[in-house]
Amino acid sequence: MRWMWIDQIIEFEPEKRMVAVKSVSLSEEHLHDHFPATDSLDAQPLMPATLIIEGMAQTAGILVGSVNGFTEKVILAKIARARIEADVFPGQSIRFDATIERIDAGGASTTGTIERRTDEINDEGWEPIGCIDLMFSHIDQNMAGVEFPEHNFVFSDNFKQILHSSGLEHLVR
Amino acid sequence: MSMSKDEIFTNVQMVLVEALGADEDEITENASLTADLGAESIDFLDIVFRLEKAFSTDDAPFKISQGELFPENLMENDDWVSDGKFTESGLAMLKDRMPHIDFSKFSADPDLGKVADLITVSSLVTFVSNKLESAAA
Image (cartoon, each protein chain N blue to C red):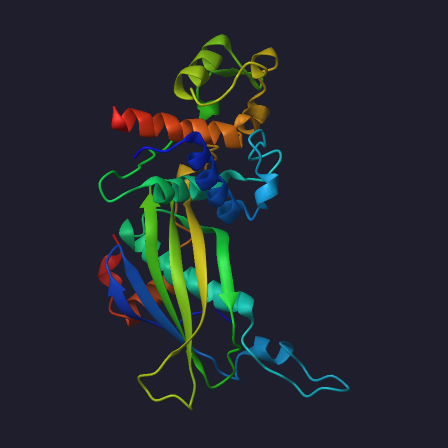
């Protein structure tokens, strides 16, 4: 399994905003452990909140990385706020809407909203279910002056594939 | 922007509640951001961003340059740090670049590992107050 928690980027405003979506499928192995049946309860497969946060981190991280053409190593440094008020089940989709609040040489802060779409809502309708605000560090600019490998290990081929399938490969310098 | 020290303190307190998840009553004037409130290096970037937001107005953006609140890459300069301690010129550099910090006790044991502990709530208030005053001058 690849560590990708978004399927496609559907909106992009340079240096400002990125929106990505993910469809949650019962074929995803982790859903069967979250949560399995017990002696007294049926299985309850639902998208772990931690991986919803990871999906937002990937969306916002790509947005932050795109500002410098993916030449900086952008690392999730802090979850400033995360509130998720409803579960997401197999068959539903998640939309990650991330906005850069502030960016400088040291890193960036982003705000984001999470929405889900279910069969009960029409194609245009997304239901807001939470918000996730994150801090990213440009790790080569860290305060302690610690050095990291030269190649950009953050934006790997997986990310390039998403950019390519979303028509955004031109953003890579 | 004209603000009293009390107003600045209240705003700084709010910034620290949001950035560090600290309780308001923990954020006293003498509390050290790292030693008492548990701030880590990334929190300083968060605090800088939040201070900029809290003290900016439409007419007067409050912008903090990188390294202005806390000098970076201190270990890279051998003239400043030797055997994990600040040298005379290192201390002079700190005092020059961080006029918002009280170095009176630090000079006796200028340990590199302890310099971040010197940033207190009160020093943040002084930092903001100095910047607002020089912007108004």
